[in-house]
Amino acid sequence: MQKIEIQGGNNLSGEIFISGAKNSAVALIPAAILCNEETTIYNVPEISDRDDLIKIIELLNGNVKVNQDILTIDSKQIKNVYIPEELSSKLRASYYFMGALLGRNKYVEISLPGGCKIGNRKIDFHLKGFQALGAVITEEENKLILKADKLIGNKIYLDFASVGATINIMLAACKAEGTTIIHNAAKEPEIANVATFLNNMGAKISGAGTSKITIEGVEYLHKAMIEVIPDRIEAGTYIIIGSLLGHNLRIKNVIKEHLTSLIAKLQEIGVSIESEKNDLIINKNDKLKAFNIATLIYPGFPTDLAQPMTVLMTQCDGLSILEETIYSNRMGQVPYLNSMGADITVRNQMAFIKGKTPLIGNDVVASDLRAGASLITAGLIAKGKTKISEIEHILRGYEHIVEKLSNVGANIKIIEEV
Ligand code: EPU
Image (cartoon, rainbow, N blue to C red):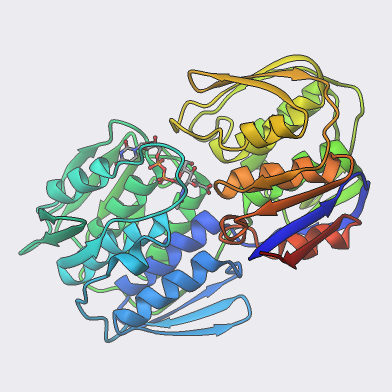
């Protein structure tokens, strides 16, 4: 079994280059099969989610060429093939094949998606959206069948501004007859990235990035290309690590506007963050003040950064409170942080964190992707050795994380151990 081993305590300096955004790439790859020709996606991160999506495209009779971070996807011959559980359950984003195949073939047979176990992750808004466009959905055990004679544009109101539902409905609607309007759409930057890709293929989508998206259906989508935006969550993770250990730590290739909530909060508590073009330079502060945050939909504080943030809170003087409002079970890191010396109590999706507590290295488990990022952060500041198991969760979403951190001075490596 692979584990990550960290000998904590090293300050970090040098440069970390931010990769393409996981949550954009995992939607852009399925979106490519809406195209009847060939598409090219640049700046795709080398993460296991990418490889799992490529396997699904190949199952559907598409052809994918990988040249470092460039994917060329030939989707001329895409067929209706059942996407079985062993592929769909590997990741959450397999659900984007529902919208893409429905738009393309008006028929989808797929098992339910997987992904991090961070609460009850329903897909009812996706399915209601497809039904509003004319799809008939049947469920057999763990499998969904979506069928439509034709898709017809409609007005869809999302009860919650769900990222996945917004993208999935956009995918299906761009091949529907007439106009679809998504009200209360999610506004995350990844949604605008996907809309730009579809528009580059000839789709007619306006308003992506706002809460009202209008999609005029078109019949044919042609050859196109797109570049994945920089990963704001990867950048945010390294900014948090830099707040604890950075010594002129330069985070390169950042879209600062995507991280306003994080940067504002860190500057408020005393972290030094300077900006130079697309780079941020972070210097740690050993006298951080306790603070509170609640996770919110974009542009609020991102749920994906809340878990690494709990580690930072253990190093602040006083009581910090973190409220997770998006997912019902996103505190998987807490028992392990407490085993390393943190003082965190969780009640009703709120973490009460008393600091400042020194952390001591321990054997811990990455229960999900961002819990894993949080344990790496903890291991880097802890005294002694930390060993993290179940690191496949981490490698699903952070490109070359071990190399990136060791390049800036961390004592971190992947080891084989039973
Ligand atoms: N929800 C429903 N019904 C639905 C859809 C969502 O009840 O049909 C609920 C979910 O249960 C959850 C909330 O709405 O409580 C938010 O879900 P959303 O649909 O916005 O999230 P998602 O699309 O499943 C994406 C990212 C997540 C990220 C969230 C929020 C992907 C593949 N996943 O998830 O990324 O946390 O948006 O920004 O893009 C991660 O990267 O670690 C991660 C979990």
